[in-house]
Length: 185
Image (cartoon, rainbow, N blue to C red):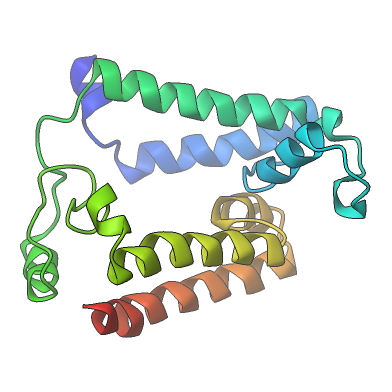
């Protein structure tokens, strides 16, 4: 059991499980998978302003907020009861490429010389974490959903806008990987 929880699940197990979740959500609850709209629900619940964007029945989406809270609690429990003792395995080629960019620390989930409080207050860290986070959030709202919502839910429902959004996500990711990230270092 411990190995099952600690080791990555193979794609032929995890993929179908995620895929089965979509029809179960639709058939059992008539709900769509996705978490990027949760911030809107929180804002609508906490700040009942006269802004038209927040004037809707957010209570009908409580299940989505509970889902996000479950994700947070699951992450906290996992980090508390199953702390990471080894570095995340990445290929030697990727490690070598990252070292050419000056990324040397690979002991945790994320390189600490990129994602740390100390790096947040540098120009590089500010661009990576704050500007990058803003762009991801803006893009998710502008596209009407995040990668999981469009790629998992939208594509399984054969939605044309989701295909366009997923293509845009990949183009953005490749552009950031090959052009913006090397420019930052």
